[in-house]
Image (cartoon, rainbow, N blue to C red; front, top):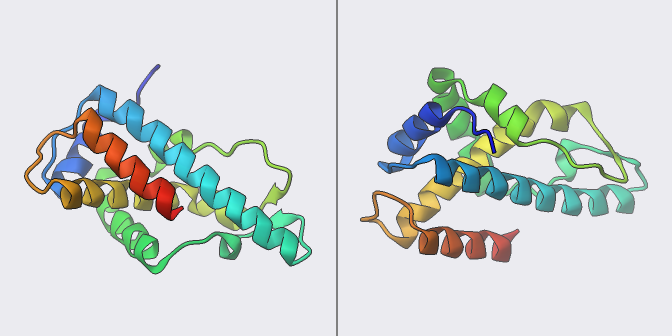
Length: 149
């Protein structure tokens, strides 16, 4: 698997969580982002259907206050790191039964960035002294996100 932007992601992990990551972590990150976004889209589709729409809007997504804060933090960090284009590629939209609104398509890199910021912070909460996320750290953080999303 070709991994893009390793150096930029390394800078992001260092600046947000004082952590060092490698290519394997970036591969895990890609998978993590896609699973989290898919879960948000699934919930959003249910909301759109309940409202009688066949188009999924950003407001349908269950963006919590915490995730919104992390999205805003990502926007600030992204001005320096320029990760949006890479995240746009990583966070591809899966085929869905509803159409995706332009607002979601435009915000998708920021959502992926916010999820990444939340992930980094979660690593530090689970193990504040950890400098390199280990397999067990990934498993624990994934369990937390799957419980919450």
